[in-house]
Image (tube, rainbow, N blue to C red):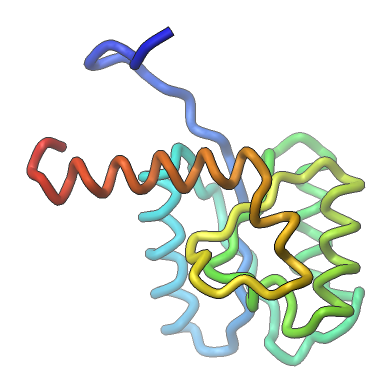
Length: 147
């Protein structure tokens, strides 16, 4: 099949960003980081929803809005800076992963350097691996001045 020709358009997957943060400055920095990863990984971040770090149950309103947007086909998935932004613990993380899977939501995590045991299965999904490969390839080209 080969690589696309120069100048051809590769459609980017629309996603919502999701962060757990209370400080607006931190939210802004995370949004910028998500946009950067998304651009390199073939994703477009259409919005970033913010959850309070204090929310520790299934009644996570920002995450519920993300899943609702996937169900309404407004976006295909959700992008997190790290797995800790999905959930602070295994119980909630496992529950939210089940909700996302039931909604056919693709979950992407920009920084996979620390993967909790409850997220191993989701971290190795084909769409995540492909996004990481595109991002790494894009970064390599940018660092070599090819881009």
